[in-house]
Length: 253
Image (cartoon, rainbow, N blue to C red):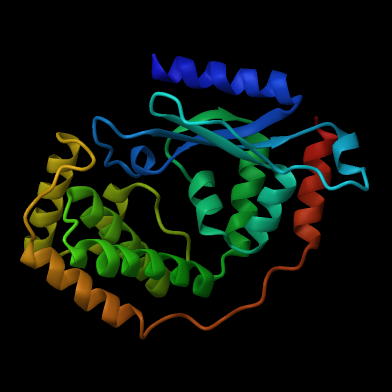
């Protein structure tokens, strides 16, 4: 029922805003694989309008945002915004493009975007993003008494993503299960994380839990380690490939 509602909402957006949705996916906990029963559906999309929209001297609005209604959270970015953010190796956009849950897809556009994303990766930017999020969860949430499976999993996911980038200089998997399989070989930590996944799948988002020493030690030690291993900076990819994909995409509409 929810997927039907999502598809109907995407069709309504196209009609009301006179755009074509090129790609739509699930983001957040449902894409990562650790949703709670009451988790929102975070639907994200990339769209394009008619050619006239891009030939005007007036700046056009480049986002479409709908109010959250009954656990459905839908918003998207214009293709020009998406390409500009891709050039900056924007982690949020990279996660969209590699989400395991896709609702709508222009297959050629997605293939082109994914190929370009591999060339555009800037490890330092990705590492900073994930470490900042992990540090915020640890210092401002978990260490201040707000102990939930959700907070632990958010800290662990971003921490493992940061380690992935430090060690591999590539885009981390979106699915948390894939991160665990590749990045965790400690049996005690593995069991602790899997108990978290079980707890979150069966309880509400804000359900509190006791602190877990194994998790606390891993998060604190890994944060300290990775903050000393941030990759060197690198230049952004030149604009030409992004301009070419924009022209190709608009020409195909």
